[in-house]
Length: 211
Ligand code: URA
Ligand code: SF4
Image (cartoon, rainbow, N blue to C red; front, side, top):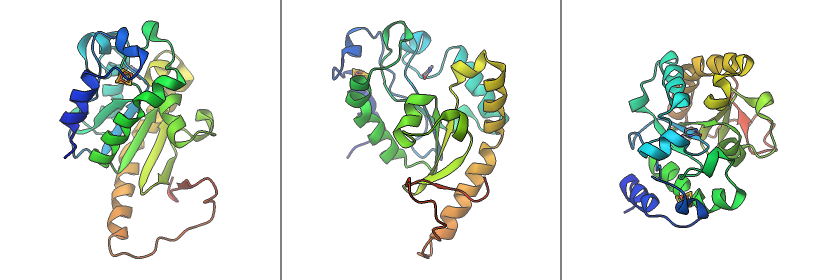
């Protein structure tokens, strides 16, 4: 049976794309298998590559603060990235690297089955909202494939840009309510009642009424 340890072991030995040749450590991701929330960043930076762990540099410190402001401990969420190996010089990941690596993230999402996914930055956002602009949709809870997905700015970008920093701080503060709402909807859904479709299903993403 597939499990997160199996995924991590495969990631550590993976040579499916060119990033295998320049990494020091692959960064599979970390967190509990039963996490309600999954945060998905872009890819490891310098510190993450050194340590083999996600979000451990300055943007990781900021992420820890953001989580705390929402009332969550880092240890209760699962943190992963779109690509598991560092792009040299922190360049953007290339489309072929993202697609080579996507099976690992697919498996992590399937195994964890989180109620809420938070995308951090445009590469993870593009998986669920390929045609949207982050400035338009950040912080908004959408129901997709039976879970809630919320796009947020990338902490590394927000750290040094006051307007984005304000936005990501506001968005994280509302995460607790979004998770509570997701939980409530999950419970309401249990007695196999048809869920009301209130229009706007064209993009396959329905925005939660409360947010
Ligand atoms: N930025 C990311 O997108 N991911 C990390 O793990 C660290 C920095
Ligand atoms: Fe494999 Fe992903 Fe690392 Fe590429 S980035 S080598 S696909 S684990």
